[in-house]
Picture (cartoon, rainbow, N blue to C red):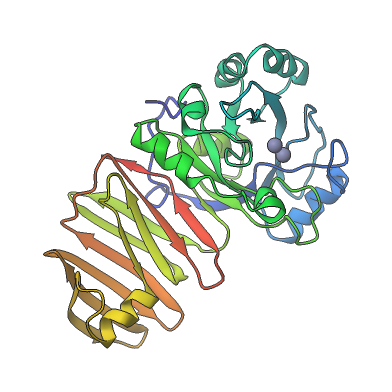
Length: 339
Ligand SMILES: [Zn+2]
Ligand SMILES: [Zn+2]
């Protein structure tokens, strides 16, 4: 089971340091984007991003910037999927586009094998590419997949590849989930939409890349995640206020709660599985203690939504990950914890 790093995967929420926000998939006039490389850097810088990979099709866009930490990247097309699509591979921290092109022509696995030693690979927009889970099982040596791609979402409503991800995780293939823009147009059309927040101890390219390799990040299109841990059958998570919290695991062992569900439960019978044990009001909001089939749930509600959850006694299987959705439909995803 690989995360392609010498160091084991870690918990970014318990690692020391600070967060850096960035996008690992963007196009410029060097391929089919509408903005120059410099304007793309200015664009993300104006939205408070810390790092960016310009990933033009088949071409390395080499510029330097004081504003953002830039990671060299290229997007390559290779191979054939079961349904007749192509694999798009985002190659990160690479130097030599000609060698990459040569390997991409050879086979997608040759390209991924090369990238394992020379940078790292993210499989772009699986849903948009018509990749099936089997297409992803057939290849190895990629660090993760794009579970959210803004361009694919706003253009053709095929932005989410979380089912592909869960299929991989169920098959115990430990790959990370990335949210990216894959921006071509900018101007709030296909950017800024999806990003990752990476925990680093210092603001350097080597530290940033090592943190990404170790999975010390979460993906988002809106909400912030502050804490996520699972140990000794106790799961705890804290986040900016959201409408819905999903704890995703294998084989129907996950859990979901939303402000809508809570309101139905509170008003009376309707969700028979959940029994409210007690509620406590404080100045921030309300703490709710509940039971579901004798397992304990506690969550905090503030004015604008759910902000904390604790689950005890749940029998998650194989892996567990957190997904939250805010009132605007923005989502955030942690990487999985394997059990
Ligand atoms: Zn693509
Ligand atoms: Zn692209």
